[in-house]
Amino acid sequence: MTELLGSILEQVRLTTLVDIGITALLIYWLFSLIRGTRAVRLVIGVSVLFVVYVMAVAFGLELLTRILQGGAVVGLFALVVIFQPEIRRGLERIGRVGSLGWVLSPADSRAVDHVADEVARAAADLSADGHGALIVLERETGLEDAAESGVMIHGDISADLIRTIFAPRTALHDGALIIRGETILAAGALLPLSETSVHAERFGTRHRAALGIAEQTDAVVVVVSEENGQISLVERSRIVRNLNEAHLARSIRHLLDPNHGRRRGALGWRPAREPTTPSAARAPR
Image (cartoon, rainbow, N blue to C red; front, side):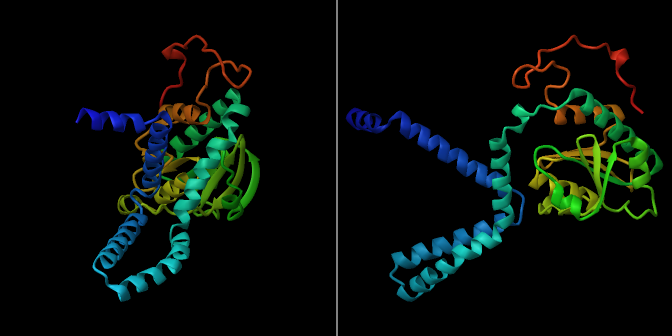
């Protein structure tokens, strides 16, 4: 027994452990992409067909084996079409890491403060008035395609303009408002709905659209429910509900600029400043 364990340990090298670790992370990452989507059932179906093929080969069922082998050739092309949203989402996430835009182009604290305050104030006012809203804040991933589906505005961001756009019986109040930097890029934009079946059963169209764009991009989305006035924040398929103005503004600042409140260094790093007193913070509405 000792000799067997010794021979096994002799074959295990550092590169072998690294290889196993990377493969495990890759498998976990692939499952995280399809978790909660319709692709899970498709994966189960493909797995069942693979088990049937293995059993057909084991029992010598030549006809069934050849049929499954012939279908596998067509199936490879079909899988690319079927899993197109998941493949696009995976490549999008890889592109976010590879761009390193968060290091080379750190956010401007004053601009982030202005955007966070105006969006939070507009959301609070719309919630108090009982008006729905869908506000998308662009980060690293460009939203030009979604913006072109609406009406291009290219206007300076302000709470009053946001409230006017989402006022009832206006031409643009049903779509999404897209913000790039300190500019309102477009209004009335169409967003993809979330493919997650659990979310589809629990949320309405606005929340599903917010989850859909957050699943495919790194955008931050603010949703104001027209039914109950709840303010929600969506980011990377995660949703936080029942926010007030102060909490929403603070969350937007953190998401748009994780190092908010620190002075920039050579690569965007900023040493911490002295904390402000609670009395200096803006009171929630």
